[in-house]
Image: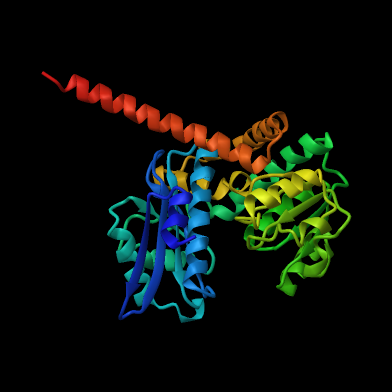
Amino acid sequence: MNLFDNVTEMGHEQVLFCNGKDPDIKAIIAIHDTSLGPAMGATRMLPYVSEEAALKDALRLSRGMTYKAACANIPVGGGKAVIIGNPAHKTDELLYAYGRFVNSLNGRFITGQDVNMTPEDVRKISRETNHVVGVEEQSGGPAPVTGWGVFLGLKAAVEFRLKTSDLTGLKVAVQGLGNVGTNLCRHLHENGAKLFVTDINKERTEEIKRLFGATIVEPSEIYGLDVDVFSPCALGGILSSETIPQIKASVIAGCANNQLGEEKADGMMLVEKGILYAPDYVINAGGLINVYNEMIGYNEEKAFKQVRNIYNTLHEIFDRAEKQQITTDAASKQLAEERIANAKNLKKVLSTTVSTNGKH
């Protein structure tokens, strides 16, 4: 499949490549769908093994943002940006150049902070464009809100599959202890869960052990643990034909993006194993909800109400999947696409009404 076929198959509206000199910059902005509003998606910087790998990441993540926004009932579309390069070589000039690239889209794409980008980086980008969120973290940043949303989603999955709302003694394996993973561990600990954790950063695992009495395991051991819930909170692509056979958990619920290596095949493998999967772009929508509310003027009550709805949305998705005998990933996309189609139809109706009223 060539590049254009790949973009077309995934339904993207626009993919832009930025290639600049002085400073040297290679970046990709993928705009998937703007039916619900301007495309919103954070920017990450990684030394991708190839430009094709960077494009694949941008395409999958931007489509995930479309579904995430639709499932969260947030009036924005889906986009994502990647800067190709070693974060150690990041310069102010590169960030300014990237800001100008974003600004050239005139608000069609709104970005923020992702992997290897800091709040200070976002502030530098904002010198060249207003189309950026997270410049001032009015709510304390997205991680606590995202972690709480993942906790609520995990609880919904446990209730659906294990038929209990009491998390006391629940065994949860958490892979990845970044800001969101750490916040999730805190909520689980406060609700009586027993934690098994792993991270490539040994200091983080020791801290979680000290704070929450977690058991530390090696990264290679996390998949095969005899636990109730497996919670992927590191990078994506970890649910594959290699790892899924090892998993003993009945529920998979974590904050990592693009957890399924091959969406259809791996999603079906989980169904066949009797594992309930909480689609990542639904359960981790707290960050998007948070930055969207900061953009429009932060109202804590409204934002937290939207985050709480992650719990209800997942119950709806689990019900759909069970009744239709499809994967939860397919059910969540079905829900998102229905909402997007409704938005498109409404635009058509409004457009027809305006043009009709405008005739003399």
